[in-house]
Image (cartoon, rainbow, N blue to C red):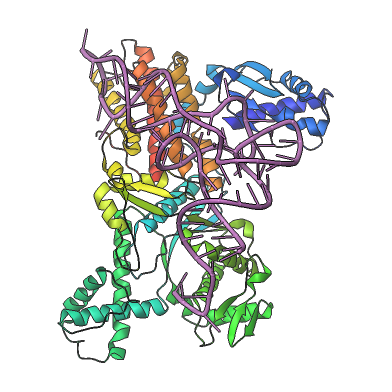
Length: 554
RNA sequence: GCGCCCGUAGCUCAGCUGGAUAGAGUGUCAGACUCCGAAUCUGAAGGUCGCGCGUUCGAAUCGCGCCGGGCGCACCA
């Protein structure tokens, strides 16, 4: 919609130039916005003020020159005003908006799709929690954000590939295996000394019981070195399966599960290090191998290979990102927990040394989630193993509410997740507010059908009967959906869609309370049903992106 | 000490990448169902946009400096 207005203004600028009123050496971006106060019109542009500097003329003079050339082919520009320091305010006739409505019905759920991404291939890596314990709520937030961002980017014309990176290598896995081994012995009444730095959570006992089911006591009297590899591998697989299960229950799907281990099959990792050495990015000091990340934006260089000869986790990450780049992605997006922000600079350095354009490398940091119950924060500690898992929350409040709560706030803001509120089926709960609008529309259609109404094809509907202010505002808001999607995708900010939906259905609820949809006037009823049907399509599309269901009855 | 994020109504948060008189939900108060779903709606009250400089026609938004909260600063992963 704004795109149309932008073109309108661009045409007027061109005519003003032809008429010799403006020079226009270098055209700046034309900013079109909707004024807060509707009295100022439907759209507004600041172009005259922006041009004032370049043209060295009074902004109001420029505004008048532009305004004189403004007109649409259909003649639905209802008024132009110049206000304040040089705003150009446009008022549009209802027909301008109504012309956009049939497209919504025609496109259905593909309404809002765009070619913004030009089929660029995007690798979206998210969650990637270590397979040493169940997902907690913080992972859940990352999962919801990543899943929605994937859907959003797809809608915006990108080819999206969602990946979970599994850190199945390293000391943590040894510790995990040993934790299970100790719990396993405990099951048989052996006295064990369970160290503080081992995994304390109750879930380790579940893993041990699972070993018991599979192997009985056959491992009990073997030497630790003999059985540890088995325990390590078993525990990792067991926990990863649990993670997969919980993500599935949360309706989050991945295209691939990338195992860190696979990077070490063959000699690719050493080749990468050699490659970086050839380029002069790598050096040896104190018996260790370092990458010169400080030459880029990082604060100091980082160790790649330890004195002991072991590779660091960072080393794997270099290889992993090299792998991502080699797979030919145009854009690489990582979604990390806020506690990883210290790694952003060094990964950017890596990506640069690998010759990938930083413009197309993004790291999104998702801030922490604080759970609240009864107004009190719920304590969480990974160390003691006492934390609320994603699965527990999903089971308690449901997928819809959980996803919505994770997606309603900007992800770089801390999130207060009120479990009591999320569970409520009351007006305070924003999820139900939106779902209720959808159910209400479905109910209207049930009533309309009972009374013999059925929507005919668009051409047989008299759209000009839609003329109440509340209706036209609703039409406007519906038509703003594609732009919301595009901006949200561009900014990589998923919460904008949630806010948009709340505003959209808010307008609908007001409209509904003021005007009747189904009336004795047949033509009017059909026009309004058509409008409301377009709205329903928009809600379905939007909630679809969030991964929230759209019930027809509640 | 250094770095990243945050600070907007009592509470939880938006604010469209610099625009006009800063918005919503919730809470408080007052109202609306013989009529398509009251899980809804209408209205009122509620603000030094943490503080101070600066940039310019114009700042919640950009820059610098403080203050407060969170999180990081390993040859751990």
